[in-house]
Length: 387
Image 1 (cartoon, rainbow, N blue to C red):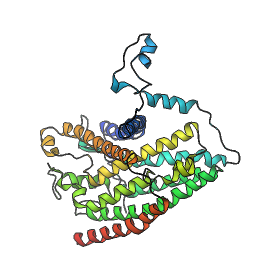
Image 2: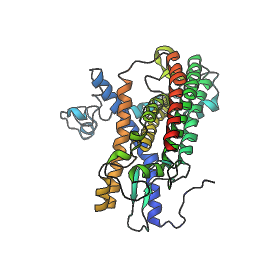
Image 3: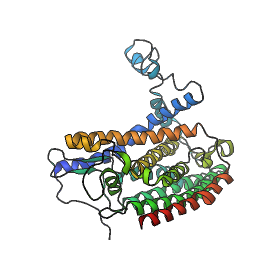
Image 4: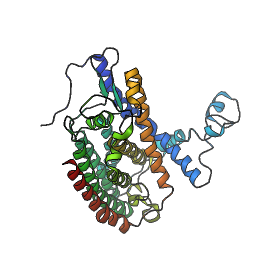
């Protein structure tokens, strides 16, 4: 039986160390989302050769600070439009929150929570930093909120709940376009989650080495960060999953795009056919929760991609730095993990504004006829090589 890996002899400093991932998950992730919206607008403007947010500024003649203190000035180009996310938040909070006639009031209200909370809960079991020994600690502790022995199963369980938000939101709206978006999202998630589960099964098999638990995200990162069978830290990234499971990496990234409903797989909400899809009838902060849920899901998928394939918090030269100062190595591991997640999010944004949307029959055919067979092939190859 798998149990929660908890040490009942935690010191006060260790309890504080365990609270840090919680603060980063429920505070840091939510705080980063508005900046990601700003980043997406800037990248979109760069790719399409047009002007992005450049009016709602922090400095300059019409900036927030000069208006408050009564002075003017020219805003630097990089700061122009920097507080556009704040303006968006004010707009969402102050818009009228209406509900369509004939909508299911309870499900219409609950659906946005199912879209936003599941990707947040996934962060509870994701290790975001190397083990460190701070003052007041008896032993090194990994920077993870809950070191579950079955962390992979937790992620899969909470990720499956996000389908309820999309399906319920579309059905409860009493809108045909919303219903079509919800049905599309459900069919899309089923087709791509099958391939995703097969890919994760091959990863569990790959990381189930002697002395390691293939269902633990902490052990997955440890296996990539340390030489198997020893506690000697690697100084090169050759142990990362992307070098041992390259086909699984490609499949996982494609499935991540489909799971996040991002182009070229955003059929549940494509405005050319469904107005807005499952959230057509939503406004104010209910729409804001759907909107935030998409970006939180991007961050969660980026964190899982880094954990499964990119060494998690590990970085080249970690062994040398940890030999010099373990706490500095742990701090740098936080930075390394954040950069990997940010890189994945930027890649998703770049693809969205570069590739055209697939037709729905192409999307479903790709899921059932290509990704699932290739994922099964990768699973068989992993099994053969493991034996």
